Image (cartoon, rainbow, N blue to C red):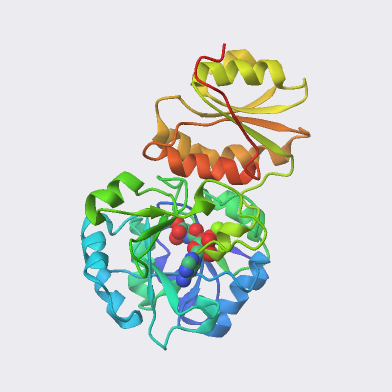
Length: 342
Ligand code: TXA
Ligand code: MG
């Protein structure tokens, strides 16, 4: 199959492919998604083939406006409308109970479904033109870092899907925040562009699923099935170092072997002149760090580095999402420096 690269003004062609049961790479503000008509179980099952995705991992339905929630979900609670009002269109996915018309291929047999109304203008235009909910996981091969450019998505999906719409670089850079509204209190399943602090400002108490910050033990089941897989991983093993930025940079400079790759905050690059480095963004700019984290992880796969060291921000605000993606890339192999480490 020849994968066509469509321009962002070729929305009608993208919508026509989706309506005909094809697979289309769609830009969103978080990461690129691999879309299919979410009401067409056969089209949805081809997403799993193209990604090599385990069948037990459900997909998110993307809708053009919040009012569509009632078409696919039952018992939409007031909290869902409050979150939609505050954060949609935008990088937030809500887990709700679905109606019977949502295909099993989307839900992997769960009685819930993830719903998201994305903010990227090209994505919104595609959803409106297709006039169907679009099921879309991130557009990477399963296990690899999510793509934040059309070119990265093409790297993984060329020859496997019908088309990719190039909508430029993603402005958030990490996937949507997932909050489960079917339990009390609501539970954060995956941190993302809408922060935990922002969720709590609307919902009050919000629990944090343990899979956000650590590896699940044998017999433990995260509520988001996808959180149990090794993820976002470049080919070389990753070690994350947290702590005060300057101390962490010095620690890595002392510990890294000559051929190792380093992901560092911009201001510490001079410490790593002998290494292949990827800049995460400046230590104080978590927005930039979120935009760069996946491309930084991917970039090492084009080099021969045997190990990767990564600096990591604190967990406030967007830091929780960045630390989660770096932690998962490292299999949560994290060195926590104590305050005052020289
Ligand atoms: O930003 C995003 O959310 C991107 C863009 C394309 O919208 N999509 C995305 O999809 O990241 P995916 O499939 O790569 O990640 C979805 C996560 C998986 O961990 C999956 O297990 C979880 O959401 N999930 C989906 N449906 C669920 C459900 N009903 N209950 C719990 N977790 C669910
Ligand atoms: Mg994904």
